[in-house]
Structure formats: C-alpha cells, structure tokens
Image (cartoon, rainbow, N blue to C red):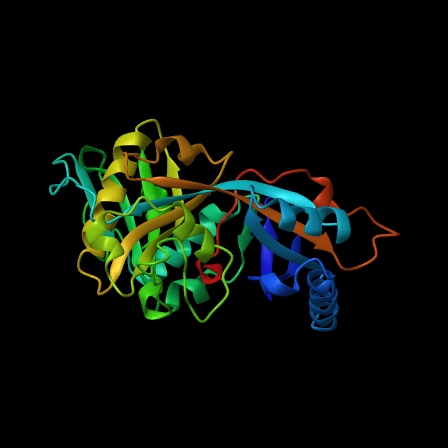
Length: 316
C-alpha cells in the first residue's frame, strides 16, 4: 500500500501487486484469476482505491489476464534499461561537470519541489530517501554555472533558488542488500530468488552478460531512481551520471548491474547513454479502480496514459 500524488492535484491510496506466478503445471485452470480476485478484495479491505501492477509488454498471457479478464487499464508505458557494470566506462568525470552529494534534508526539499510536475509520484519521498537501501542523492551540473559547494551553510538553505540552466538530480538504491539473483550454468536465463518483484525475471531474460559475470553464483544491482533533469545539455550530464553510478557499483559488494526505468514520454529517456551491452525491457503499468465512481469521474484512469512518472525503488 502506498499514497501517491498526481500532477493534476489529486492523491490516492494504491495497492501494488508486485508479483503473480502460477506453476506451469497448474496454468489455464483459472488459478491466476482467482488469485487476482482474492488480492483485490484484500487490498480493498485495507483501504486501497486502486490496484496497480506491471508486466513486460511481450507477456501476452499476463496482458490478456489483466485487461480482458480483470478489467485493468493501461496506465503508462516505460522502458527498463539494464547495463552490466563490467562494461567499459570512462574513468574520469569531465572537468566541466561536477557531481555533488546532497544532505538528506536538501534532497527531500528539492524532490518535493520538483515532484509536483510528475504525473504520478509517491508522497512519502522522505521515507524512501531515508531507507537504508538508498545510498544517497546527488546533483550533476556544469561547474561554470555555479551551485559549487552545496554542502556549505550558505548554499544549503534553499538550493531551489540556485538551480542551474542544465542539471540532473538522481538517487541510487542498493538491491544487493535486499536480495540476490542467480544464473545457473545449465539454464543461463533462469533466476532463483526468494521474493517476487515484477522486474527480476525480466531482467535476466534480456541480459547480454559477459562470461565472467554469468559465472558468478549470485549478484545484485544498483537502481537509479528519482532521475529528474532540466536544461539543454542533458546528454552530457546523463552520461556522467551513468558513469558515476557504474564506478560506485564497482565498490558495492555483489553489484553487477546498473538499472533505471523511465516512461516513454519522460524527456530524459532519449539521453540515456547506450552501448552494445545495454539491454532494454518494455514495461507496462496497469491500474484498476476498486471503488465506485457513480457520482464522480474517475480522474486517474480517464487521464489516459501517464507520461512522466516517478518509479518507486521499493517495487524492484
């Protein structure tokens, strides 16, 4: 359960279904539909106004279950970018670019100021940033435009009044401390893990992992979240952000991948640096109303596809 805000001013209680799996030997028996109905009833009793789930666009069986049998609506289309940390990366940050870590209060203040422009975002961003799995929040900008020494008392009072013409804010989530992925030699595209998150099976199925990575017994990944950028030079900044995350990942135990997820309409999606080892997964978010809207319009689902959303790292 989580409380989300929207760019059109409304807020909702949403119950997230993070995984639905039916044993291959028991499929096509209506079990998936019964599970969905039971979960929806439970979430409704807990106060959810909507249910939310995600699946890979190419997963036709799940798509048919959600849309035709359970009456879910396509809420947003996104892309998950998966990059092995072992890929060659630039060692040095360009001299004209600076990446600086924010104090937690600065990060909360800046995010709350900017999240209102998102189509959907979690209202408890302060809780997310204070989670032990969150390694921190950074800003990336051009030195010549200022914002130097953000951590000084003078510049730390109101960082939004000094935002630059081109800048990016991002946070990093360490999934390695929550769970690990495993690739067996006999079945290189099969994952074994204890929890059910919608992304994990899809991650393994698309990886272009070098041999030295696939031989590892277990591994995890760092998730870039809360990425927001403004300005005309975002391409250079995003490349520096990606390289920074990769270098950081090299020092995190068992971390072998860098991931992020962006909506197709997010302005930053065209600036994600790509190389031959990067994989992409087309992800689709679905939602369903659990309450009656007889006396009022269903604002959330009638808005059509949401284009610029905040991807909650707790759902990975």
